[in-house]
Length: 235
Image 1 (cartoon, rainbow, N blue to C red):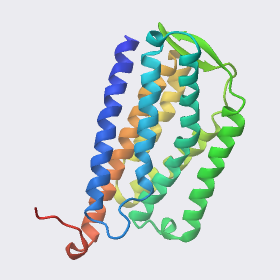
Image 2 (image 1 turned 60 degrees about the horizontal axis):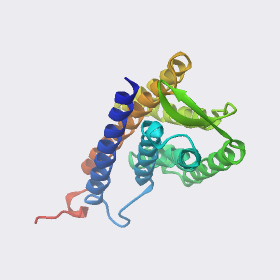
Image 3 (image 1 turned 60 degrees about the vertical axis):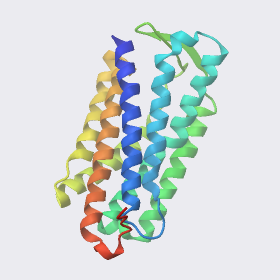
Image 4 (image 1 turned 180 degrees about the horizontal axis):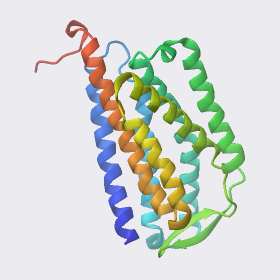
């Protein structure tokens, strides 16, 4: 069953990655100046989760040893370096939606400082002292930390996403982001009795909600940017 679950997760993340590329490319047509902004980090987040699930899916095939252990270390490095950038992702979406505080310079500085701070914290507290051990979860071989890791980074990111999600509900009646953060919170609770596989499934739901939110932001920008400022291709 869990082999099928992780197979579905891998396929789903490939689809999400392609969808994310299309969203970023479609936004290029309605923007002037820089072609990309901070929301492009969502592609790196999706890739990191895709890699994570691929290593878990094929762990038993690779087999216990230094190769799988090294590939598993990369999982945790990517998690520490990439996941905090969701702060930049949601700040830029807020700024594009003309949410008042997000248009201020201080909010951009705060978003970058919080992102960098979370990366440094995760590296020092989780990655540098990381020791892995081989474990089996429902017949799937994977390397997991010997000691329990503190979920401070995840809690902070979830709280920020939930706060922006509430603002989007109040201002735009957009529920996707808040629903995604609610589901990932429930996933953390279900992971206690059912294992990490359930958490991975709820992470997929969160990423879907983020892309739906991004799609709404693009549609919003299309409405407020005059046609003459768009980079429209007729052929």
